Length: 317
Image 1 (cartoon, rainbow, N blue to C red):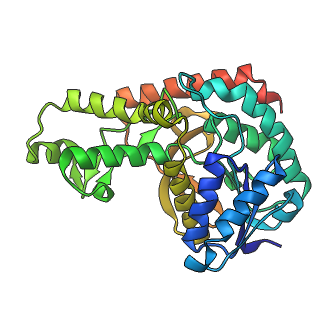
Image 2 (cartoon, rainbow, N blue to C red):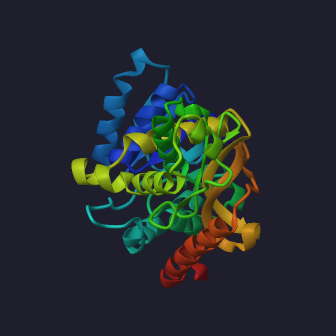
């Protein structure tokens, strides 16, 4: 039986420990188990995070094993090799698929039936791998996808236009990585088409501005890694947002990575598109409007991911 107040985090590196900290503060759960190949690291993180529980919501945080996570509502998988300076997310694929081969079958063996949230990079490829390895319904395997990329786009547009980024409706779709694309054609601010809002705020060089902002968003992770060797706070807050959407059954739209079954002509690939998610996981993809160029770029992104999936031998799993 699923315990709706329990979460597990697999991997206690920077992303995993930051995600655990964000989840502790969220109040979504009353029990959290941390799992890591380095048991002492998991124990240390649990002790450190648990020390702050008197200042937050009551929660029991402890180090455990996969058996302890069997009845969790959500298992968040952050384990994997870290992205190094100059290394793309797709460069990580062979190392992290190997790591997933030691994790996902263990989750399957203990009879886990909740939602599997994949955060490790390259997230789209590993989401596909997790679907293949876990035996879970496709709707129960969700990749963090371009949730953080879209937040970065909203932040950049909010700064550019002098408005609250929460009022910006804009998505990054495709791969969480170098082939991602901003959907400008359907972007808006408070319901006003983005182009019209830009001109209302005195911005008329749309092509140059869009190129600059899209490049800044795409390069954000590389900029952070070059300065502090890793990114973790932004993705940790994305994990908390996703867990909140699931546990509160919000039926909200977030650009997560999930298995395509014909949308935009894409099949047998996990890629990020705006998706309705709730307590049951993936409900459906939202068919946002794409212009001809955006659709072509989405297919190019999918082809790049499909090539990686083929080279990694994941279709044979």
